[in-house]
Image 1 (tube, rainbow, N blue to C red):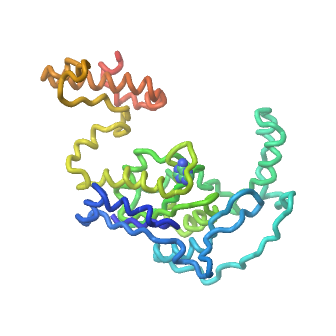
Image 2: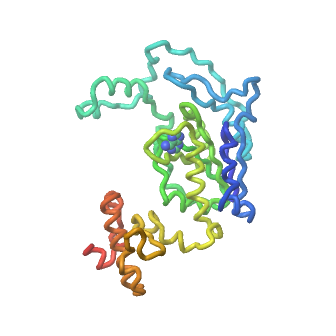
Image 3: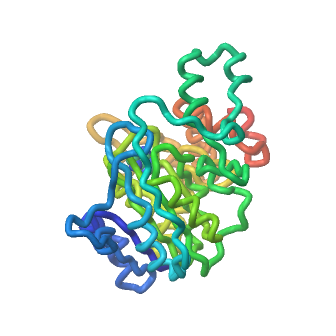
Length: 317
Ligand code: ADE
């Protein structure tokens, strides 16, 4: 699998030369290259960001620099006409009126009385629809898309405001031939970047790794990469360890507890049944424990369980 990562801190990814990921590279299973986004800048300051249009704190990553970089790495021809680069007059306080047809109708939500009037006003003013009326603004990752093609590149942007990255995504992406990760920093990247590459037919995904905000996408990329690559055939010494893990398979459950020797440690014994040598009973004990732990810790996973993944004895647990 070819993996390109673009970041303003490519040094972050030196850790990928360690441990199993390092071994997978030596074996030729992975070919990882971390690129510095600033290599695609042309100004003396190598600037990659600018102030947010519409106002607000922080800086936003510029689309021009990203596009030069991504066109190169995706081997895409840049458009012959870049379109006029308009310098926007910065609205001082009031946002400028958008054309009527571009404004989303929030009246239903407002009537709902769930939203307070002020909040609805702000959304009314700021929200615009795409010119083609499309609804995929990055809040979804186009799950109706065909499964990942081995040769087609997948462009992935970590983003705290995107759908959650799950084991299912990791499994799907472990079959890809080329992953290209773009790490945002500051207040994020210009939203037209994923929009443009989607329009070019590229499989673009945006993922959050959890409901918290990091300083940038680098750590999120490391997390996703580890989850994806360890599922590749040949990556793990013992592939069975993957099959039995939490979040795997139809009936995704948290895993049962694990113990090693000695049988009694500091007065605490391992569950006796695990020493019985009766594999049927051990399997049943572990399965019951997995179900009970999942019910306690992640009842949402129990809710989402496919009934077909439950056996008769499970239903009694
Ligand atoms: N960038 C900042 N926070 C992030 C998160 N939680 N997930 C993905 N990317 C991020």
